[in-house]
Length: 427
Image 1 (cartoon, helix red, strand yellow):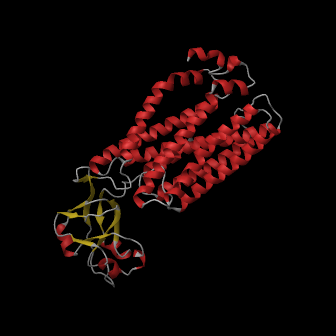
Image 2: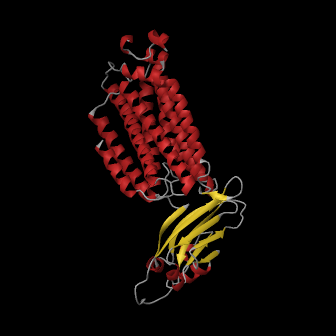
Image 3: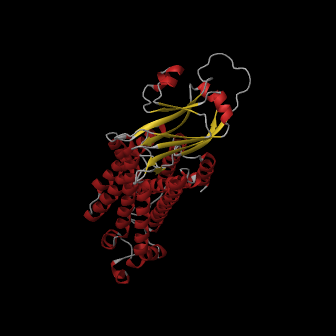
């Protein structure tokens, strides 16, 4: 719990408004001089969009010849000189009024537009006399809605996520109404897999909470283009804790079973058989994954639990998940090859399917997204990973709550087993 508390503190203090849609801040001549233009944000426009800009110090902007530069393609932009950057912008907007609107030309496919600030001092060489006053601004970027009016704050890469989270909330609600009572009875009665069921339930609740918080953030975002960044950070925190819990459980189970077989102990078959070695290994990997998840959140500005992994931390996180999948595969192969019972082998195989689906869905979807257009990558990865990991939890639930297989593979008394054959009449 202390680790979770530290993660929460870091996320709360590092939360910032999402990049794009509605951006507020100050135009700084010093920042523009240092970086050959002050980078503001990016936005994926589709159709005929709109950018609205409001500045408060109009006279200061006029004195500095302040301009907004809209650049459509950023490939090779870093290699350009300062003057080449300023002159190569597709659209240049002189900040001469308090409020200005700029229409983005019609385009057949979604395109990324980058917004930068420049003034007369940006490319000026030598020392500047006097102090340069900053200019406060607010920029709103809008895509056309279903009626063709520029009222949609969502970038093309986020279009549809709001509806997806709503449908997922409805699915969670319906499933909880159907299964909450038998699941609660199974948890309250204990049994050999009581700890596993608690972890699965906790992970599922955290996933549902993350989905709900993401929906609240996007519902507010659709109205003002800002949303509630703290809610988005809390959603990512819930998903991170669920990832950590599932990782610890899956590693502990596999390593514990392997060590249990090496000790020839059959008193607790297929249970969470923790040991110092399995606990130490699980904790080490959990700490490594937690550190990579936090690093990824610092590198990624937008609120997404799963990214298309354009950062170093994202690629390291995917490599860790692939390595864990290979490790679990080797452990399960050793257990299955030495197992004589066909029912237990089926149990381990089903468990392996759930594990591999949980760990490999993100790397596979990221590799698949390489073939997609830019505006489709984040949506495919986010929706695909959430659905695959939800299916993985359902597979593991069915495995550990299955009455017939659970009854056959366990050597404990039927009196202590939840959802056994002798009690099925209650459900």
